Length: 98
Image 1 (tube, rainbow, N blue to C red):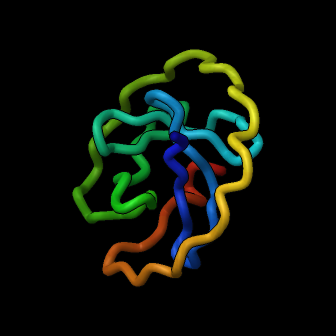
Image 2 (tube, rainbow, N blue to C red):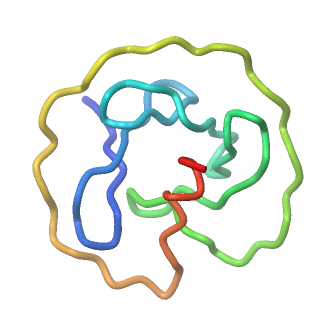
């Protein structure tokens, strides 16, 4: 089953495949190290928390390096929406797209 990533409005913005985060078109845009989310360049972005990439104010966790090309698994299909989520942590998924 695909693990989708949502924004604060409940809209699916990406998905997890293995240790990589992909946009909904299947393009790799990030990597995971446990719950730590990093850009493909290795720079720390935030934490995977309750299906969102959020800033939990843990500080700068450094870089884990570039993993190479993880490939494109294709589109995972239509995830649908979920209810909007009010978090005390800000949504930082857009940082993966920069």
